[in-house]
Amino acid sequence: MVVELISVGTELLLGNIVNTNAQYLSRQLSKLGLDCYYQTVVGDNPDRIKAALDVAYSRGNMVILTGGLGPTKDDLTKEMLMEYFNKEVVLDEEAWGMMKERMTRLGFTEFTDSQKKQAYVPKEAIIMYNHHGTAPGCIMEHNGKYCLLFPGPPKEMQPMFEEYALPYLKQFSDKVFVSINIKMISKDVAPITIVGEGPCAERLGDLCDNENPTVATYAKEDGCLIRVTAAAKDRDSALELLQPMVEKCKKALGEDYIKNIFEDI
Image (cartoon, rainbow, N blue to C red; front, side, top):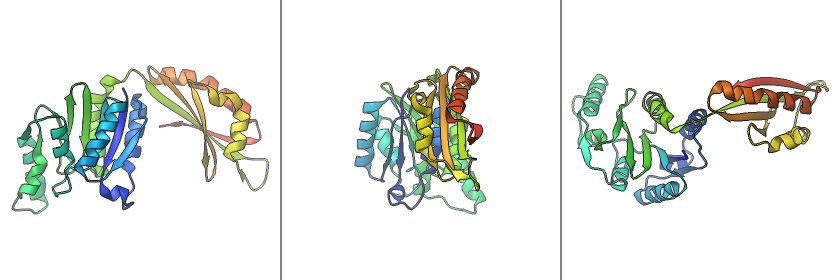
């Protein structure tokens, strides 16, 4: 399964907030063994969101969107998606009841139509109820296309993903990705010297061309990170693939480096 991420919000394009949702979701998809080749950020504009969806579905069959579920006029992602998937709009009484209960605890005595609009959902969708905010998320399926829609605030999106999306997405995965990181710093000079990515890559040589496990180098401020990643049917099988490659990397890098080895969790 190929999954594409679309983050909706003009505030993301303006740099007003950091897109931590994309980082979180990418890590979760990787753990599930689902491929994610593209990420898109689009503003709160129906035509541009639809265009982003058209492109995403030309490259894969599942899209995860975050943002645009709130009560204001520019929160229009859900409405646009219901039109895109030709879904009937219905009021989810459970979601509306949860919202009223939460708002009452916060001191609200009256509820507006704009607040209520968050409880309108696509008919025949899987509803992901929001226990940490107001707007529910949803999962839609139509003609072999899948769409998961989440609220933008990470404190709402992340627990919703773990409760609802994680078990749902497992059905689409036949593998997991597991990584072991090797952090390198030089120990042959005092004080300890930062190791560049280039020298590490040169020592690793053809190991960086391996397909499974893969070996990749990353420049960091405090040294070079070598990530060894295996795809397998389960974590134990992946670790069996990883260990021989990790040993080859250690041997190629030599003894003049300090090696901090840890699993990427």
